[in-house]
Structures are given as C-alpha cells and as structure tokens.
Amino acid sequence: MSRLDRLSRRLPGPDALLTPVYARLRQAIVGVVATTEDFGIDYDAPAGDPGLFGPGSVTWKVHADFPGMMAGGIAALMLQTLHPRALAGVVDHSNFRDDALGRLRRTTMFVAATTYAPTADARRIIEMVDRIHDRVRGTTDAGEPYSAHDPDLLTWVHCTEMASFLAGYRRYRRPDLSRAAQDAYFDETRRIAEALGATDVPASKAQMDEYFAAMQPALRFDHRSRETLAVLESMALPIPVAGVSRRMFLGAGAALLPPWARTLIQRTPRQRLVDRASAESLHRIGPLIRAAMSEGVAVRSARRAGAERDCLRFE
Image (tube, rainbow, N blue to C red; front, side, top):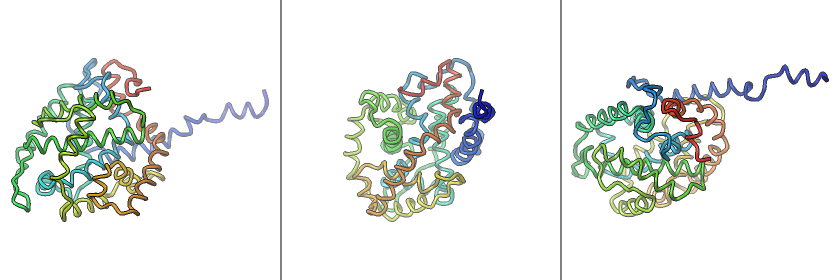
C-alpha cells in the first residue's frame, strides 16, 4: 500500500467533513423557524400513527422540502397583504409589526403539526387555532366587517399558503411534478382548511387557478399592504451562515409570486432582478439545506408511521 493510500484512509470522508457544517446550519435554521412555545407534540409516538395524511400522501413529500416551504411561506405572506379584510385581522389582532418572525414561526408550527403530528395532536392544534379565531374580528379602515371564522377568509389564507408551498416545491425541487400529483396535493390539503370552517376550497390545480382569477378584482395594494410588506422585507432572520440570508429567502419567495401579484405589489424591475438572483442562489444552496435538515420532523414521523424516509420523495 502506498503512502498516499495510507494517508487517505486516515483522513475523514466527505460526510464526516460536512457533519459540523450540517449541524451548524441546522441549528441556525431551526433557531429561525422553530417557535419557543411548547405545544406538547411528540412526533415520535405513538408508533404506527400516520397522522392526518400519512407516508403515502403527496403532502408529506411536498412539505418535507425545506427550501421550497420557506420560500413558499414568504410568498404566501406577500399574497396575504393583498386582501384588505384578511390583512386587517393580522394587523389589528397580532404583533406582526413588532414580531413578523414570530408569525412565520407560528405558521411553520401549524403546517408541521397538521402535516406530520400524530392524529390527536394535529386535531388538537386545529382546535386551538379555531379558538384563537374567536377573538379575531373587527372592521377594516373602509368599514368592512371581518371575522377570522369567515369561510371566505379561511379559504383565502389556505389557498395563498398551499399554492405558494407547491410553487416553491416545483421551482426549487421538482419542476417536472406531474399534474396528477399537483391535483392530489390540493385535494389532500383542503381537509385542513375545511376543518377550520373554510368552504368551496379548490381541490385541483385547475380549481386553484380559477379561484385566484376570480379573487383578483377584490384584491388591492394599499397603504396597509405597503406597511406590512415593508415589515416583512426588514424582518431579521438570525442565520449566521454564509450563503443563507434574509435577502435570499425573501427574494426567492417573491420570485414565486404569480405575474398578476408581482404587478399588483408593484415589484420594480430592479426588485425582480434581485428576486431572480435570489431564486438561483436558493436553488444552488438547496442541497446543502436539505442535507442539514435531513433529520427533521418529517423523517421522525416516517419512522413513527413505520415507513422509510424514501416516502418523503417522489424519486
């Protein structure tokens, strides 16, 4: 055996060299998206519990991709600024202006719990959010009454999130995702919105496209939209890892907006250029992020349900 061979055997392999990088990145990302509140969810038990969707679902696969979900969450928040009554509920009944990151964390918790948590915990979280909605009611600046229990508003929030999550998955993970898989995703996830009281929830890609086309006349980008978007744009993401930044995630999220929304939000040519660059950056660094997040709640839930981690991929 040559000296070079002996030396190579003593050196750590690529996986070992990257382990500290993965650990640091995972710790940083979890520090951003994980809420500090204890909701008592155990993703590891009881054994055999598939949750509301289970390892055979499209939802498990789409929601397991962190880059697409993070960018999709940003895009959903941007879209939600366009509905006056939905936005009033956020501005009037939350501390979004002072803690935009907190809202992102709570949304992350809700999506993770309803997707992967054991059945009883998922239903408990839905009931908890339903109770919170009891106190979210009021009147917009234009004198329009609103309530978080309004089926139309529940459908709007759901659609902005699911459409954006799927757009993120397709852009940053699987551009070739079949139409059948897209239809199944919307059909599966509508059960969460319906459990909260939403009605006429789109159950296919075609229905989702028709829904947004029908909604556009009711949307507007006003002073409250601008203020809320400015808060979002300045939101601090404490990710101290090179290549993973607030600007990248915000731009990659804005890049997911449909053309009509980019026009309504008045994204300038320069902003759109930055958005495209951010999307390319996220696409390039996506494999590193996925590797760092490879032991998250999705994988733990697969083990709980008695499935292999391959259930989280279409490949």
